[in-house]
Amino acid sequence: MKWDAWSNRTVWKALILCCLPLIAFASCTLFKPTPITRDNALVRVNRWECPDFVDDMDLDSARQGALRSLEYLSRLSPSARFQFGPDTFSAAHVVKSLETFIDIVDSVPTAIELRERIKELFWIYRSVGADGKGKILFTGYYEPVMQGSLVCTEEYQYPIYRRPDDWTRIDLSLFDPQLSGRYVVGRHVRHTVVPYYTRAEIDTVGQLEERGYELAWIADPIGLFFLHIQGSGEVVLEDGTVLKVHYSCSNGHSYRSIGKLLIDEGKIAHEEMSMQRIRTYLMSHPEDIEYVLNHNKSYVFFELVDEGPLGCIEVPLTPGRSIATDTKLFPKGALAFIHTEKPIVAEDGKIRTWIDCSRFVFNQDTGGAIKGPGRVDLFCGKGDYAEIAAGHMKQYGTLYFLVLKDSPSKNFL
Image: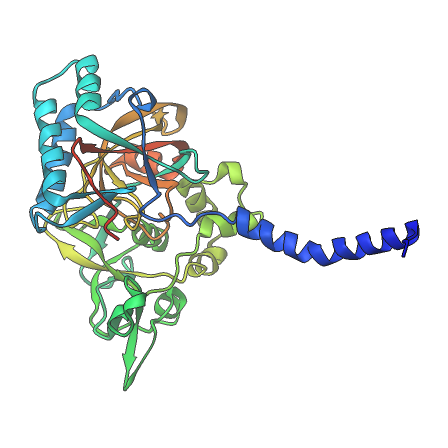
């Protein structure tokens, strides 16, 4: 039987309509982004793809940073595994890598000698970044210094809390091995666990008041909030005694950016956003302080330490040399190299310009907002410059990890 033109058109139209869902499904399957894991967060680069390894700081501080990482590694089994992208190395090998780096630094090399020795002796791995091509957003953090008191007074009304006694963390892998690395934080009430109090419930409602959890009191609620963001700081008492407070744990609620809130609500322009700009806005709009700060339900509890500030690997951070990354993706304590920008600050405290910043650093910390392969937080130290740099830094750059050349074992996960 012959088909006329109308019939042919009808059949083809029906076939196309039937196939559209299959085409859409295939497209979603074929072009679905590959999840970022330890296996693919770093890629090894060839010699000609390496950076110049120009270091803009004194190498003595690089030596100090390396020694801090060795302090952490000394607490681990030599056979503990460290993953650099698709390759894994033992803790002993990472130790040898840092010791070799220290030997190079101690030889007081010229810039050319340093670059050539690094390229000769080390494998270089580049982070894939947020775009898959190595683009990294760099921010900064610092160690705030605040005046405070051991007792609540009319001037010092805002408490720094230690970990409450009813705080608890449940390791879900104990109930299901497939939930390895996942936890639930809450408080135990009779025979159950419920979510821990939010920032609003703690600071506004006063759920923790008069329960003996206060380490100290300070005068500035905005400064207290920034202390929570930075994770460590110093409290200077009226007699000159200095208390070092350090992150102990959090209430388990997800971090929410108050900067994004203020941008979304048109209170601060995106291009003006900085920690200093947030403070200026809140000080000029005191009626908004409670609302804005409580937007971030996450709350940090502290502990007193002798040395600090400490990173997530429990060693003191080295200004300009310690970085915070997503440690689910990148090896803790490892030697790294960054290239980004740093500010030049005038005497009036204003940033005059931004210039190149490249240096060896050490992966010694992490943070609630530092997620994925495209984020790095650089520890800037303490003092006026550190606060200005950390408050304004949102520059792009690149991140590399280094490990001594050897025959790495393949993926152990």
